[in-house]
Image 1 (tube, one colour):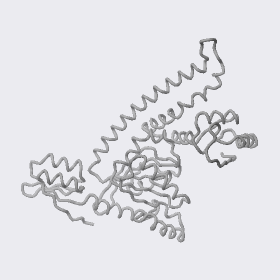
Image 2 (cartoon, helix red, strand yellow):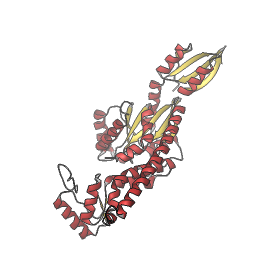
Image 3 (cartoon, rainbow, N blue to C red):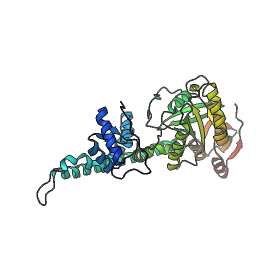
Image 4 (cartoon, one colour):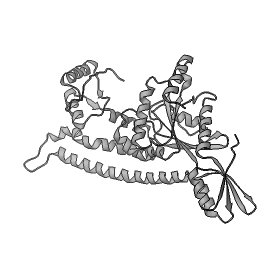
Length: 389
């Protein structure tokens, strides 16, 4: 439970204590007055700053990064998520070990001898370093597995849901696919592992939709590094759906945070559509005002609700249209002995059905222009098909 708050506006943080000297005195007085047991800073502290503030206040100090890491640790369910969170925690902890063993470092040995604190510190550093190396090797295996999985899904139209934490990405995935195993909870970082499910968007079009971990302002860089294999799902998709909580008063700031993270991941070139979720939580005038503002700021945005009847119909229509544009329906005629080309079609295109016409194999499939060009160069006949809406 939060019992109090202290705010200070500075041009730059104090290098030793983050807050100014007077504000540290005020903080110490507030702690005594409110009998607070823990002090949480809404920013990342250096190891020295954290240690100095603990000495000055006599209380346990937690910065923003450590708090977010703790939340991630409580949310991790799968072995992959636990590996990623543990790696981030250890990398955060390593430069802060000195602070943890400060009480023993005061005990010194004789000339040429080391105190027990220093010995324990070196032992812990060595153990943590070994554990970090092991976790990185295991996550490299995870990354290779994910790469193989992505290659197996290469023929399908892939969509990734990205957005600020608790914007409703999992609710949209569940509403679009009907998958019963999608966890939907009204809390931060309910989803840590990417979850991919098949969605029928109508008009004979299907997409593979992936839910991803939510972003947040000032996401700790340790987490971004540890979850890179997971987050790279967004760089391997045909379309990004940026889900925005339409009912949140700071949705514009949240949108900017997500765009910054996407740019850091190298996903800024992937086509993106903005989906304003939770429209059901806005009354008529506020919903109309939002639509007017968004139509000028972000044209072609989609307005949706994952909890109302027909609330996702507009999203389905837009996805079906995107599939038709980026993966148009084609009719491919192959010689009967073109087994390799047929295998390529199954691997890199969305094959709808296969039949025969005389001695030729006829395939109806959705594919991009690059795939169609490769087939023509290999001797196949490719013509445009007709979508049946």
